Image: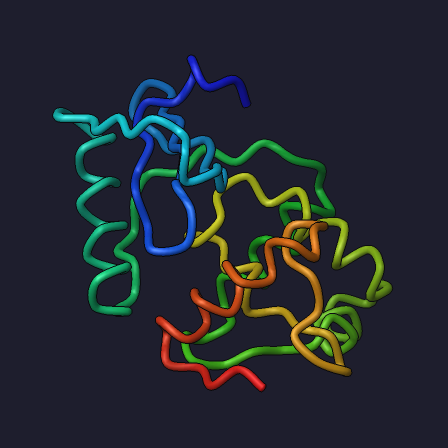
Length: 157
């Protein structure tokens, strides 16, 4: 996502979070470098989403429902729906989720990698059978995944 398209750029303890709103729906959340310029939305859905994310980051409490517009393949939408059913403070392995969805671990990982609204669709709650696994296709973002899981009450190994 181009920086000029972010409605807000939210500071978090681990990285900045770029938010995109289209009309009255959240369409994207992306982790950005801490050096990215902060931009706070002051009205409408963007403000509501900002307030929800800030409360979540501060308390670790569940995010409230917000209007989200998801665009993806039928398979991606199926995986993202399943991710929303993983309770806070818990994790599931890529393999277990793949069995549940009658697909492969790799396919689940690819759908997680393309998740357009991190936090609201909790791909961070999917881990490798041998450890924490990756996050958004990048090993360097593992610290973000660990921080989010810890914030939700999960004790990372």
